Image (cartoon, rainbow, N blue to C red; front, side, top):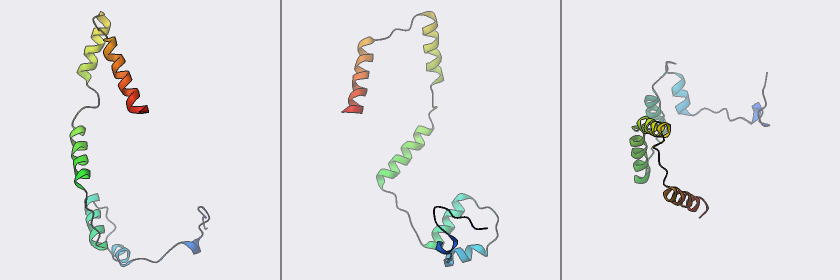
Length: 108
């Protein structure tokens, strides 16, 4: 049975295999670690990836942010307790200023 995806039939598909694909088919079919597969794919194709210093900095920042919890549970508990006992105070001017800054950052 032939399946036609988006108007592409069996005669329109490139079925030629590269030498990298052919050599990969003779190897065992055991699952590989992603890093091993990536290294083998790079070696077979001779491709390299070079990241800019900005991309490297972003990756480091992403790793550092991953170390922090998504929510500050202690701070949430402090606010809940303050709300419950009525001691939570809202600075209306600070809140208004933050709203204006957010509006400025979104709409310019």
